[in-house]
Image 1 (cartoon, helix red, strand yellow):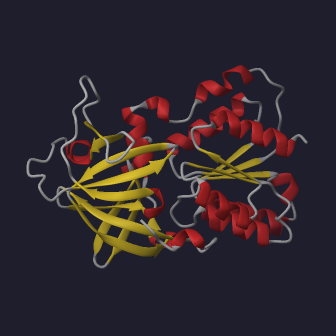
Image 2 (image 1 turned 180 degrees about the horizontal axis):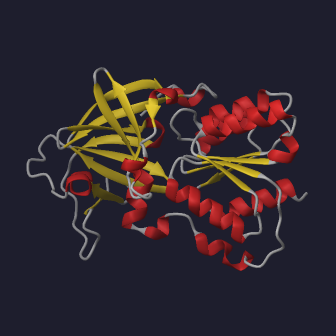
Length: 300
């Protein structure tokens, strides 16, 4: 799937593929999509997770298929004659998602995507990362990373990678994180704390992180308040690329190291992050590499 959005930098825009499951509209960032193909009966895998429909091999690569209807409603589809597979790539994984229908692509601003409130987040168990009202209907932006991690926990943050860092000397360097997932926000905080970084300021999206930085500028306390920024890319209100661009264009902030930590870091996204001035870019499972990158940036 070819789009132009990856060629642009820091616009705070994205392209959403709208699709349906059980008559409801959902969305996925086009940057996650490898291809969309018609449904074909997958090969079942014995003793697989209940949401795993099976596997298929469209070319030379085996793709695991997740039954989104079963995941979202508890029931599998019966009439699949017109169904589709959305084949994705994130967290260094290729996964196909079985959906009812694909409706099209809409270009929108992250500012138009509302963050689910506390009643929907349900202590980090929600699989909705945002809500978009578009052309008179609500589109739920799904957290595909959480769906896959719930099925196979080892695909999530590799927390075991930092176990050996426990007991390191404490370091009070202020680090600002921007991450919309409550679960990942806590995991990143806990992992950094285990690695010795005790002064973590957590923001739920780029907009909130930018507010922290603007307040520090107005107070004249930038270096005391924030000495490193870690940001996801996909976030409601303001994405990580926009946040990076704003920081690196600001004379009072551009010296602050920015680390992009996202499931979307691939060759295309890496070039985009480099053009914006990101100091390091890492794929989300690699929490150990994140700590290494912060060490190099802050302790050099």
